[in-house]
Amino acid sequence: MKKILIIIGFLLTLNPLTAQKSLLQSGPMIGRVNKTDIKLWAQTKKPATVQFAYWEVGKTDTKLFSDKVKTKKSEGYTAHILIDGLKPGTTYNYQLYINNKKVRFNYPTQFKTQEVWLWHHAPSDFTFAFGSGAYINDPVFDRAGRPYGGQYEIYQSIAYKKPDFMIWDGDNTYLRQNEWDSKSGMIYRYTHDWSIPEKQQLFATVPHYAILDDHDFGPNDSDGSFWNKDTAIDVFNLFWANPKHVSGLKSATYQFSFNDAEFFLLDNRYYRDPNNLTSKEQKTILGKKQLDWLKKALVFSKARFKFIVMGGQFLNTARNYETYSNHGFDKERLDIIDFIYKEKLKNVIFLTGDRHMTEISLLDNGKNFPKIWDITVSPFTSGPNTHAENEPNRLRVPNTLIDVRNFAIFNIVGKGKDRHIKIYFYDQKGKLIKDFTINQDVDYQPYPQHRKSHKKSKKNK
Image 1: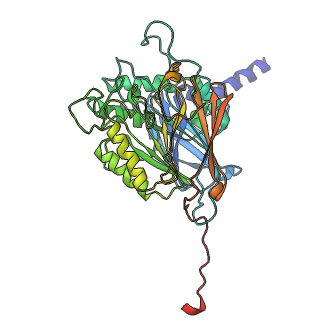
Image 2 (image 1 turned 180 degrees about the horizontal axis):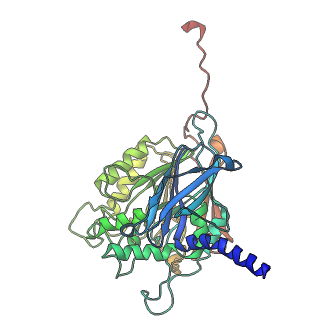
């Protein structure tokens, strides 16, 4: 009898924890990370109070608590919490609380702030994950026949690689026809796709940045004419903890830095002209305001590597589907290329997706022009394009095409002129498919790496 009472007592002590975990819909998720602050995110199943505790690894006596946020239906029961006052280059444990009760996980929940390196030392090596096309099956709303999505274990494989952060390159969810016309429909789709168990460890252990493409914006091939686009961006921002969007733009456009790399996250839908528009001479994908901002930001940037993140391929010369070369957008494509040449911008790398296949494209016009790269990675869990081999992309780097579900890990490694990018492509199980190396332009003048002493000469005394 005594033994039974002990067991009952033990089970009763677990009930509050179990109850709180049952209130968690998805997450927690680590959002953008700076040197002294970070965004954390979580979603509950109904109205609840969300809070995070955090402390330096090995210093449990320094535990601090974030502000509390009350989730509500109109915001999809999502909570965005900013934690500031952190130490640069420091690893913290964090703990989720729902209604003042701990929620436990079977994996460690930690984050690390960015380090202060400028004027102190050379930038450290770092890694990030990248890819696009994340279809999650939902039989109630999917087309009849063979499921389009699959192999969700890819998200666990990414988590096991432990990148410093991850970039989702659009089509991160696929709005169905019954969903893109209403906010509640969009919230339902995100909630459904964010809640699969295979994503939870990835969300909780890796910082995430994201752009959108047509399927998480509206209908297939949607553009700036989509009447519900402002709602689409509002819901997108509810489910991602991105940096603050670029001032003066209505689009989902963001920018962030990590060590000696800078990332320009573009919106290729909000200002886009319709693909079938034929009466306009100079068609646009990015829109004048966004394109002007991008050009100025690229020129201002002192980063060694400049990554331009956008949905749809930039360099691919084939006029198929939604490449930049197709549908009359080629003039804007050439304008961007000419701008990179005229401003002599080194180490510009486009990160693209959308095409349901992976390939590397290179525009190399000789030593008098900077090289321009386009790394396309797709899909995560959507259906692969198995016919891309016959596509006439004149700029495709030989032997780089991948036509199965995959993801990429970018390693930025080395010092000074030897610093380079090593890209590893993996299948859904985390098995290496192939790798590729991009060396920086050798005449690049990097950030100052440390403060030098400036002694006055006798002549100046």
